[in-house]
Length: 352
Ligand code: SAH
Image (cartoon, rainbow, N blue to C red; front, side, top):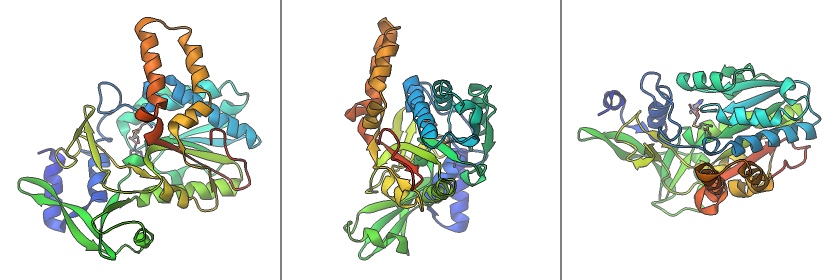
C-alpha cells in the first residue's frame, strides 16, 4: 500500500466511502502525497507524454493561433496570456517563440500560469525565463484583463464524479475499503443536474460529471463577454457527451488499476466537451473540432515539411512519426478534441 492509500483508508473508516472526485483530488493534488504535487510526470522517462512534448510544432501552432485571434480582436494593448496546467512549460515556450514574431504580442502579454504543482512551477520558471511569468492557484485569480488562454490536457486531470443509472435516478460510484486495500462501492444519490441524461441512457449505464471544469468554463466565458475580446482554447481527450467509465490510471506509460497505487499513478477521465461548452455562459463556443483537423487547418503539414528540410536519419524519422502521432485519426488526431470560446460579438477563430 502507498502512504496515501493508508491515509485514505483511515479517512474512509472515519467518514465512510469517498466520491470518485474526492479520491481523484487526493491522488492528484494531496499536498504531501499527490501525484502532481510531488513530481514531474511528463516525458519519456515519466508516466505519460503530451502533444507539446511530442513536437515543437504543437506549441508553435497554438502560439500563432493565439496571436492571430489577438490581432483579429484589435490587438489589445494589455492582456493576460494564461495557461492552465502548463506542465514543463514547453507549450508556452514554443508558443511565445512563434507568436513573438507577431509585432507587439509578447510586449502586451502578461503571462500568468495556473499550476498546482511546486516541482512543475519550478520547471515552468526555467522554460519561460525572460517572459516574467506569474503563478496563481485558480482561474478566478487571473488579473481582470482581456484573456487569451490555453489548456492542454488540464481538464482531464480535474476530479469527476461517476453516476450509474438506476431506474429513473442514479447511484454514485464511491471508493470504500475492500480487504487490505480499496474497492468500489455505490450509494444512492440525488443528482437533479443529470435529469437531462435520463433521456439518452439505459439503467446500468454510467455517466461522469466534472463540476470544477464547468465552473472554470463559466468563469472564462464571463471574462470573454466582459472584455469583448479574447479567446480560450481547450484541448483534451474526450467526447461531445460523457458515456461510460473513463477513469484511468497510467504509470510508466502502462494502464494500471486506478485504486492500486494512490498518489503514484496519473489519474484522468475523459472530458465531457458538451458539458464544458454548455457552461460557457455569455460567450460563444466554436464547433468541437478533432485535434488532427484543427492542426491541419492551421498548417501543421507545411510546418512539418519546413522543419524536415533541416533533418536527416533518425531525427527525420522521429519528426515524421511526431507529425503522424499528433494528427492521425488512429493516434491523437481524433480522440483529442479542440474547443474554443470567444466573445459573442467576434468571428469564429481560425481552425474551427
Ligand atoms: N499542459 C501540459 C501538462 C499536462 S499535465 C502538457 O500538455 O504537457 C496536467 C497539468 O495540470 C500539470 O501541469 C498539473 O500539475 C496541472 N494540474 C493538475 N491539476 C491541477 C489543478 N487542480 N490546479 C492546477 N493545476 C493542475
